[in-house]
Image 1 (cartoon, helix red, strand yellow):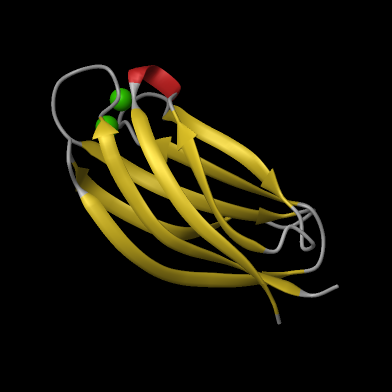
Image 2 (cartoon, helix red, strand yellow):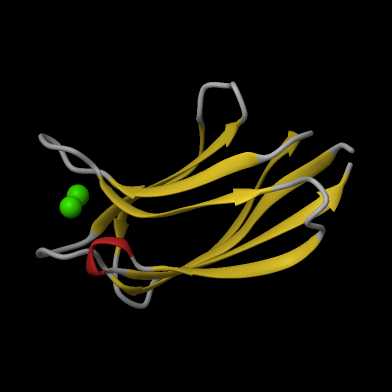
Length: 111
Ligand SMILES: [Ca+2]
Ligand SMILES: [Ca+2]
């Protein structure tokens, strides 16, 4: 089965621990492939809500990872989850790593 994974929206309810805005990056990793960036915003703050329209095609279980970038130092993990091509429809997931709270909306459709 061939499907697409589409980012629909990202809402910041609370940023990660520490002062200031988050530098948020969303990676999509098809099994066995190098992760690709689907979204980056260097100034995500409490109350920000972005409409997104980015999609990637995939044919097997894949991983979505949301991080808050820190330089220097290691990125903070906001959250990650697996998606499969037969998980069709629109979905919403709440991610809460490192003291944050983000709501990510995404869609999986047949391609
Ligand atoms: Ca940062
Ligand atoms: Ca950080």
